[in-house]
Amino acid sequence: MIEQNTLTTADIARGEEPRQDVHEEHGNAPLLIENEARDFRSKWERIQAAFVDEPRNAVEEADQLVASAIKRLAEVFADERAKLEREWDRGDNVSTEDLRIALRRYRSFFDRLLTV
Image 1 (cartoon, rainbow, N blue to C red):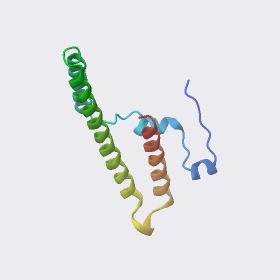
Image 2 (tube, rainbow, N blue to C red):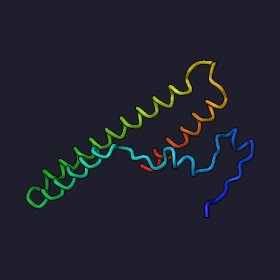
Image 3 (cartoon, helix red, strand yellow):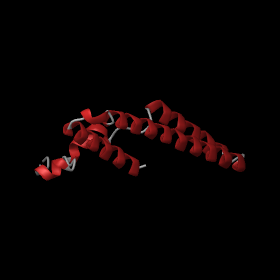
Image 4 (cartoon, one colour):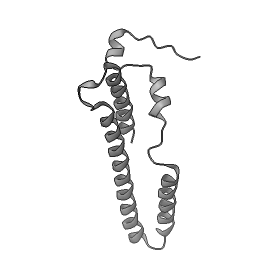
């Protein structure tokens, strides 16, 4: 059974909407495209397998891989934030509805950021 969410006008003004809509739009979107994630996992598996023969080298490579993954995530989030900012920062000609949608997208973005 699907849970019904009843929203008041005040809820909508604050940008509140049923959580289901947010997850459908952005909530389950992967942070990295599939081949990037697969490449990171493949590199990790290679590093982990190499630990037996060269533990110090494996740890150094793991450090570099984690740094690369963090850098890539930062790029993804910076790009997404820039897109969000462009949507609402168009001067005085932005409607309240456009701002409500922008706030909803920021909330989704923020939720994704906190799940990392």
